[in-house]
Amino acid sequence: MECRATAKRHYRRALITGATSGIGAAFAAALPPTTDLLLSARSEEQLAQARDTLAQPGREIEIAPADLRQPDAVAALVERAEAFAIDLLINNAGTGQIGAVLDHTLEAETAAAMVNVVAKVALTRSLLPGMIERAKCDGSSAGVIILSSAAAFAPVPYFTTYAATKAFCLHYGEGLAEELRGEPVSVLVVCPGATRTAFGGRAGYGGEMPCASEPEDVARKALAALGRQTVVVTGALSPVALSPLLGPRRLFTGALGAGMRMVAGRAQR
Image (cartoon, rainbow, N blue to C red; front, side, top):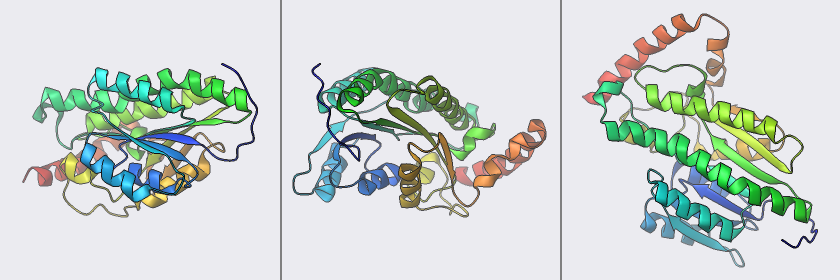
């Protein structure tokens, strides 16, 4: 690869997964029009709509429909992102269900592990070498944003698998950031609290989430934190995320389980 140093003050090309709604769509809207976009989600129709909405003169926007539950789809997305020569990876796509593990199908449980963990690891590990090499060549810095959750800081009964996958994201991102210290890449783990997105409905919770943040606020704070810190917790209830670290975990998990049991019961009605 021939290197040619160029000045860069922003990310030139970004891949965003789960880009058609919620926090993913907010990231796409928050990036400056000088950032070209590779947008990925399951629905090609919604991706095309997002592309039209975000279109700016001179801006390149490509869409890459992908079901991240499928390893072949992840591999194909890696190829698209490499060809697009991204310098910012926003690992946003996620899935999960409220309720007891044994009340969910095996397919739903494994889908959460595939999308929230396996796909994120595959995309990150596959794309980082090229991102770092390009950053070294042009004297710039690449970026990786991994969407975790405020649920990552403790076991969450009746949201067990989702919270566990988000704990993986938190630890993976923190460890990766330390390993890459000194390389021209910044890693940020974003742990949103309750956020007004369609995720709650898909997860089985149809009620209004208390103290919910707007997805635009989450995206804006994350982009501002990238390169300055490793973990950012967003939302009015963000201090609650740290409470398991301040007292006995078993007591906290029991109290949280009692509350989530009621939430799961309402979701099943």
